Length: 316
Ligand code: GLV
Image (tube, rainbow, N blue to C red):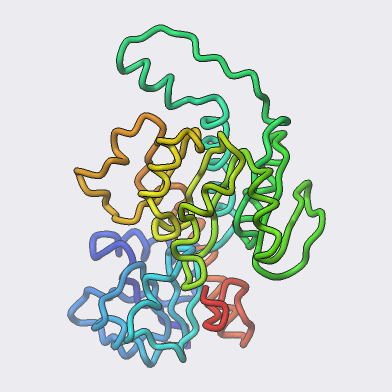
């Protein structure tokens, strides 16, 4: 019997799009709507979700898999009702990494050339030269997180000419695809002190929440820039504002914020050294997501373990 996937991701209005795309790319999977009152939720084998209420999660205990449209699943496992015996799989696929790599390249070059100042000058009708003579090859970028997405991002920065290090908690250190990979908490101080541009791509876990605090930011090379594409809760925003105020940091690009949507009174909005985007850095096309998700379901049906399976011990 065809595996049955019930879809709640992106709300009722998105269902028809998901259904049509699965019909095109994965006719071997039956698609049900979470929102159709005639659907029996207990008939489903898998669910495709973004955010879920506790009630929704309680209705998912019988599933073989929960597939999340996000690369981060911290919001799901934060619920006491998350059914930990059900496999949870994060979003992946080539497009997810490629989009993130493009975003980080844009943000890194924008920080290198101080593009925020040009944007402010343009909106103020100011014609003033704002020259930067440092090149990418004179700029050391450190990427925090070297998993499926971090590796693609770091290697794309290296191809663009930046000097690139990556850092991860565990695994292999060494040279990989033009990137110096560093491992372990103890190497961080030395690495940060040599970092002109920090890119945060870590998952949000109890170990990483609040990691980018005042002491951490103060450890960066004076004049460094920050790109946060992880989660808003990694960064202590008041510490960032303070570091910018002191001139210790020169600028930041934040795709994620502690409060989303960002409150209208946040000091981040109008800061002359901060560029904000509304959590859009990397969302693969519907087609690419469906092709990836269908393969995940087929892997689980074959008894295989998908690469981006949530691991409770690791926390992501
Ligand atoms: C978005 O932040 C995601 O987790 O994919």
